[in-house]
Image (cartoon, rainbow, N blue to C red; front, side, top):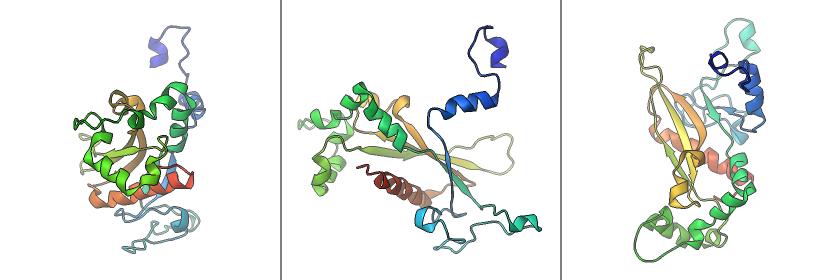
Amino acid sequence: MLVDVAPKDNCIPKNYYEAKKIASSLGLKAQKIDCCEVGCMLYYKDGNHLTECKFCHLPRYFPPKGDKGRYKQIPMKIMFYLPIIPRLHRLYASVESAKQMRWHFENKKEDGILRHPCDGEACKHFDKIYPSFVVDPRHVRLGLCSDGFTPNVQASTSPYSCWPVFLTPYNFPPEMCMIKPYMFLTCLIPDPSNPTKKIVSTCNLLLMILSNYGMKV
């Protein structure tokens, strides 16, 4: 439809395959990770070999159906993870954004006015507990937020919610750390209902992935 309404000399991809090919060069691929049906754990790294949840002991895969089902295991639930490491690398690849990543350290003020998350009591308490982290202003400070929404409300008879997880770097100044270009969608958790405390396993996954790459967060 876009190709039809655009001028003849447009650069819009002609089909989905061409659009996917262009987007793949950005290096922003999604990774599928099996997770517990009720959200107790993720089958990742050391737990990738498990066939049932180590907390609630629910099976990881659907029971096989027929002869073909013996060779193809279908997980009960899958979470989509969009790697955050390449996007954090891009922040330091640009001269402008790399300079702004030190703003939280170079613009601290002790006048009692809250201008930035680094002026809050929570960040000050964190700095006292982890002084080795504060030494290098380039260490990445991330804020995590999540909220659910119900897609296809009118087309679905049963309630269903989808929970995106966003990360935003608090290294940036206030006018940058809460705008769309720097709010990174990192996880997409499908679930028929609110995952509540079970979302903690997702947060632990993000911390584990970042630490494996030597990222200080």
